[in-house]
Figure 1: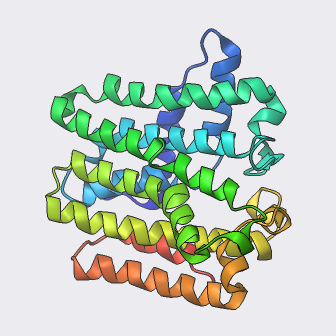
Figure 2: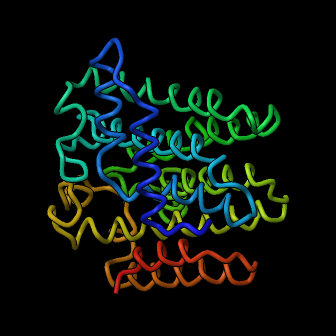
Length: 292
């Protein structure tokens, strides 16, 4: 069955709603579901499902894992928006979680999603077998923890208003982009590949693609933070610059950032083509990231 981008998004939205019934205690489940089900691009679950399909697997087997990765992504957004982090009032055009449910419940909702997501995988993916489940969970916990997105967030915070004092800002920025963004992309791609019984070589190829695509996505995000509007992005723009954050645009300037972004996207396409990885969905995603 051939799936288009919108088909995947619709499926993920339906499954996220199904996997997250409101139950007692209502407040925590409402807070969890609020951010998870905000209208979004669903890039990470789509990438998980499409990778599974691309490597010859049944993408339906990857649905619980794909939805769990979107829950993990939502957790990072909830905590990223907190007053002690980036202190944002809006996300995807709606009030952020702590603005709706309070800071305490927002912290707890993020914590709950961290554990709810892998439970969802285990409960709904038993047919994959123990070995695959262990491999997927290992990927999940690595990306979610101190070696993944948390590492990226820590260095991102440490780098605020300290750009001139960072010994190697280029290397530091690459570290932030890798762990804050690319790690979840690689989690989605590698998990889909594992479910489809991809070979070690195929795992290496899709990991290279995920690293390249994740960094490109973050470069684009840095550019849009300076050039876009609230109506276009659904969040307060210009905050990175105001906070003195180390970003691609602050380090290299706007024009070089655009040039490097498009070169990075071309490299992503080259990785797909040279490894005979055929996916209209991935090509569409890359084109959407491109900035003229």
